[in-house]
Length: 418
Image (tube, rainbow, N blue to C red; front, top):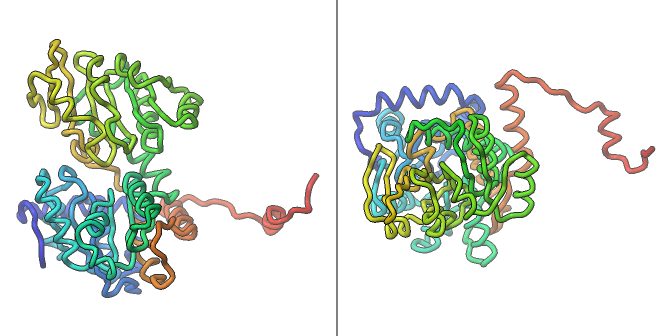
């Protein structure tokens, strides 16, 4: 077995965390039980570039139960839980190449290591695995049945590849499943982002001016949780429909430069480059805090921040303080990377339950329907989305009604009116 981890002796602690998360992931557990009986992924090599957490570990075990051989590397240099990586290797025999705080060279070496196993299915969180195939290892693309993508950022990249006619194999946008983005992005990101900021800073959010850049599903979740903790939330948007929605939800919406003057804490959730940049740094308050909850560390213009500062020091484990020429101090959390995973533990297991149930069932779907797929980005089939929602309700011991035959007929009819 090929692996590269920090310390195998951490396995015992990692196993306990994997088991604890598994108890909260009952939908995935139900799928795992079926997979163990039916082996729908027998002989399939799966190359996964995901956050190496206890929740991801349970996905790897589900895939393995289904007969697959998973190979895992990190999708972010700061998100790896080293004890979980150790347990996957030592206790469960899963090949893992991931070390928390690995440098950029190691990060891509680990990606190439996973691709070196010639995976039939890829699983991505940000599309680095797929883009590495397309830029460096095009000869491998012919052996890939399909890929899956977990993030908004990754789906944007993949749709661009499809539009430009360069996508070499089918990819399913797991991120766009309703049981993923409506829950993982909103409730998972909302809670875990705030959790990461509080763990990193120990600041009281009540009474603070909290500025959210981007009002997609992640931004909605963070805004909701920030307001719940007593923050005065300001939303910055470029999309008029999302901006209007934020207004109707009771949030103040204004320009980024005006928000920069007022904010105490800034959170980027845009998926785009340089949401926070020099013109904002120049007017921020002394003591302002900046955090990113987008996938890549590009939403805050860190090189510009470093160039404008006269000094930098580490004031807490996840806080860098930059001193401006006029003496103001600006604080950057978690090196501008995903604050919920770098400074905390990421999404709660119960919400990742649905996201990773999508990954497992989509892997089964693309393997079963490989001959029917074209080189494009697909949505998650509706029946999978609905099955996951049904299973989630079932594990929560919640029952819902069904339409009567009369109601079904009424909804199908065009002749029944007033």
